[in-house]
Amino acid sequence: MKSGSGRGLENSSFASILWSESKNGERNLKNVTVTHDEKMHVGLYENCDIFDGKWVRDDSKPYYPLGSCPLIDRDFDCHSNGRPDVEYVKWRWQPKGCKIPSLNATDFLERLRGQRLVFVGDSLNRNMWESLVCILRQSIRNKKRVFEISGKREFKKKGVYSFRFEDYNCSVDFVVSPFIVQESTFKGKNGSFETLRLDLMDRTTTRYRDANIIVFNTGHWWTHDKTSKGEDYYQEGNHVYPRLKVLDAYTRALTTWAKWVDRKINANQTQVFFRGYSVTHFWGGQWNSGGQCHKETEPILNETYLQKHPSKMWALEHVIQQMKTPIVYMNISRLTDYRKDGHPSVYRKEYKTSMDQNSTALFEDCSHWCLPGVPDTWNELLYVSLLKYGKGTWRS
Image (tube, rainbow, N blue to C red; front, side, top):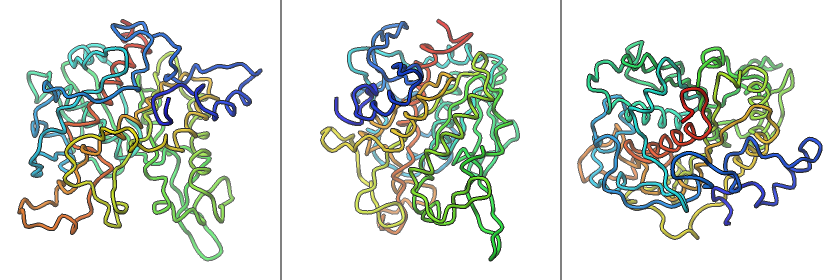
């Protein structure tokens, strides 16, 4: 199996690290849901890794018509922003050797009745949250009975957002926490400066720890640019590291998250997911240096052009392995890697529909995803994973 596919950890040299650090030398992959030898007993997808597959054309997609969901951030609504092609919504994820069900929105809401599902993380989780709200809303006859409880229509600022589905007495929420751990300040000899506390969870934890389902993500903010180049930025206790590599800091933060989950989450009440890294497709530079994905209209079809499995996800898999709490790891890195066609690129809120516009005059968005689009598939796989691993009403 090539690196980066939805494979079990036993297929990698990294596994030797896991085995050597596991208790009593026992080979235990209970927290990693991508193993091939684990049988699935739901529907038609027994003995199948749902994250290992390919994209196939499907004209029955998408789950909600282009431009139909007013709850989407305008920057994700590529159709309303002038994107002329529609092929990017005509693809379905097909795991190897099995079939998975489409997301049945009525069934999803029925199982979620009286419960709370919370997405916690960065704007890629906002992408996924808005996708799920739109999919579920599409099945509701009276759309006015789906609303953000505080009346908000913009979801970019820090805070907690909650969409209530009145007919089912449930909510689908989003907690903005791009690092998961706490952003802070440190008082030094020359004044105060911003730091990131690798040893403390973000202060938002009380807003979601008792939810029925929590979907975490973090990764895109862990870059050289967003973390002061790793210099005098990462903090543990009263110590600020003069210099620390991003991957090391990321692993320390994930370890803090893992310990918090093991200590604070009631696994009998709450199902915890971690959605993996969503791959970007900038050609010719990064988002702030001329990187482009404009005019990409079909997925990568040749696997040799796919990237290696992200090092951040190796780190995540390692950390999950040490946990007591069962974590459903959604390994979506490879399936997103194929989809160079799915990004907003220039079709964002600021985009002027004039064909004379020089597309390079704007920063292109080649990291987030158009809606409808790729995050709808993440939610499809969330639905399947809940049917497989879920508690209570999710047991089929």
